[in-house]
Length: 252
Ligand code: BGC
Image (cartoon, rainbow, N blue to C red):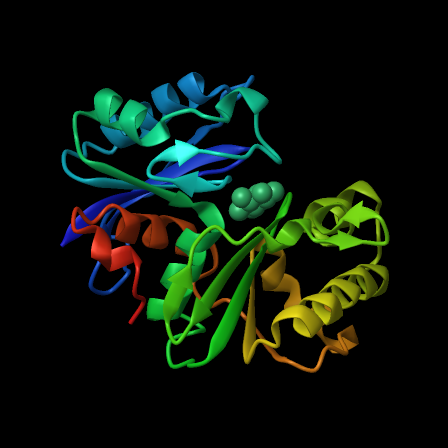
């Protein structure tokens, strides 16, 4: 079926219709700048504009950078604090007059990679990392998502890991590739000691430059780059918008 996938990020709100069988975008991508201040109400209005500008009328799935349970936002690491407790699913449904499923943004990307991308044939324990402003994580066991893992916030040297190893940290501290790889490697070692994954998929914009930092990594787990790149967030969000909610539970 076709579902409109929405990806809410710190700088833009993007969306496109998606074929949920193939993961392909079936229409143009529409992007509007994230409103500032990025209050949840303003985000809902802008998301509504993205959907309307695309001329879409039907079910919608939305990836959002926070813990999401039953459509409610529970955390606000990189977003406006006023989002905590907000019924994002309900507000989007009222704005759009359609059924809406909401999911954590990293879980959306992970679902897409497991179904159509780098994790397609992977069994066992797979961890996908989305390296951006923060570190988003999504964890799969035998293809099944364990939703809302927040492993970007484990503590390393007394700091929130994403403040040290996200792409945002690289930019903010002007780290060169080798320095950045060292930070990421430290994070990967910690994660693999805790989880012992069989495969780690690295996504986010920085994964396009994997050749700059992958050669410096010493972690023992097999590490690959995401295949769907930019589109994973939108395509995976669409899976969360399939009115039959079972669809987001199993990636196969
Ligand atoms: C948030 C996660 C989110 C990740 C990527 C983290 O700071 O806590 O919920 O998935 O950033 O956007």
